[in-house]
Image (tube, rainbow, N blue to C red):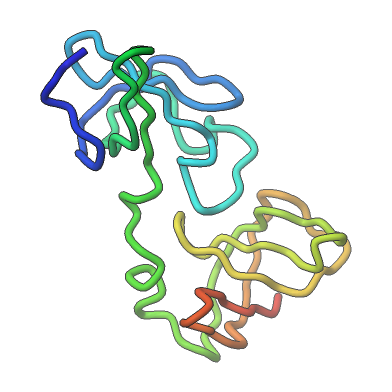
Length: 153
């Protein structure tokens, strides 16, 4: 294992293998790390194939290194920027395009992806499915709680 690799470091890699739980990324010199599905995006995704394909060149951040087990855990979502950076340019009363990322009436709403690392919530409505494109009205931005309340239009 390369001793020059450190947690927090951003490295270039190539997607080598995609599984339902994550992506194996070669980060150089035969070293491969695992990018867990929950570290791909703040938005809920059902499969890593929504974001990646085999052979794709990507940048990843080294999340952790376990030298004894020879394991490297990677992250991708930090490269999309912080919540504060992603919400810039969005204001209340705007109408935006979004993608339904979770439609579960028991969760009290629909999670709508506005950007790869920015999700808002609209009231639950029947008939919306995962992956469906929608137009949303920005009802309220709550910066201190990092929440965006939306209305589907």
